[in-house]
Image (tube, rainbow over all chains, first blue to last red; front, side, top):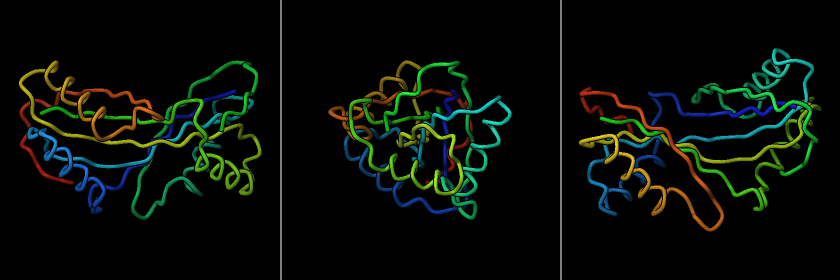
Length: 91
Length: 91
């Protein structure tokens, strides 16, 4: 079993109203030292695969097809092998 | 200037309908090897601080007060010093 940690962020040129709102909220709470906030998404995906290469290719496909919108978002992920742990369904 | 990468995730005992829906979508797309998906939030925060300790304490406060709901979510973050780079406002 493998665990993929996927980070999806807006491309730098894309406006981020959520990030701006959070920045404003944090400043109002007294965090005046804040410069910018960019918001994104984070996924933890557990999957079975024969090898790390196969898992990596699967996660890459998932990001391209569903998790990220390639027009405005970019993604990166880390893969961790969890060995032969029992596949507990926690989602 | 410091860059904090903040990861906010639902606690393991909390239901994650978004994650379940994504898991279903990925299975429908042919990714049958998927076991579970947990969804979360990701933030990139740039802030000024005198020291790493001060920055860490500020980001901890931001998470506690606004970015995460401590009842159902947990958070972790990484801090990176960006030196004296000009503070470009990109959010």
